[in-house]
Structures are given as C-alpha cells and as structure tokens.
Amino acid sequence: DHNGSTSMAPFMLGLRIYSEENYRTSFFGEGFVGAYRWSVNSGVVKFTTVKGIVMGGGGMDIRLTRRLVWRVFDMQLGLAGARLSPLGTASISTGFAYRFGDR
Image (cartoon, rainbow, N blue to C red; front, side):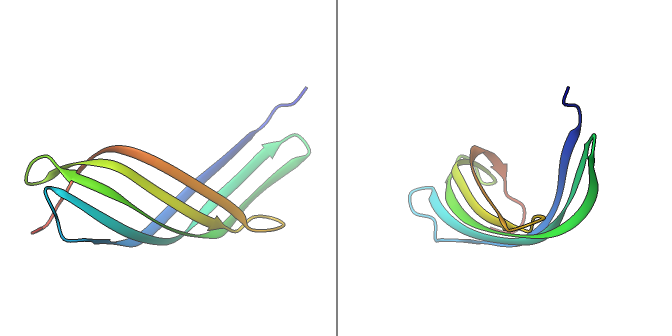
C-alpha cells in the first residue's frame, strides 16, 4: 500500500524582452529566478524544504487587438535545487495573453 502526497509551490520573478513587431508578430525572451516549497508526506518519508529555481526561455506572440495576443508558443527550461542533485525542468505552452502598459 503506497499512500502519500507531494506538492511544489513556486514563486518566480523575472524579465521579458520583446522584439520589434513585424506583421503583428513578435518574439520574446524571458528569464526568471525564484524559489519553491517542496513538501513530501509519504509514510516513512516526510519533509518540507525551500529551494532555489532559475528558468529561461522564449516564444512568439501574434497580436489580435491592441492588447490581446495569441501566444503561439512559450518554451521554458529550468534548473531547480533538489535533495541530492539539481532537477531539470521544461515546459511548452500556448494560449492568450493580455498586455498591460504603453506598448
């Protein structure tokens, strides 16, 4: 019988830099730093720890209106601290984004 739970709660801050828009299309690069809380409660293994995380990536936006964009793709690679060695992470996503500010 294997019962238990594992949870990770990240908190990240970062910077995104956009290219010039060309035919409603723009590319961006981004970098994030932060920390996450890692909790495990699984019978004999129980711990909670806080570790650092750093991520970088980029993607492509297509502007639909002045502020609404379709994020065609957003790829991120990260490196997070773990118990015994660093933990690599990657993600790719798509969706819609609302841009704030003067741009």
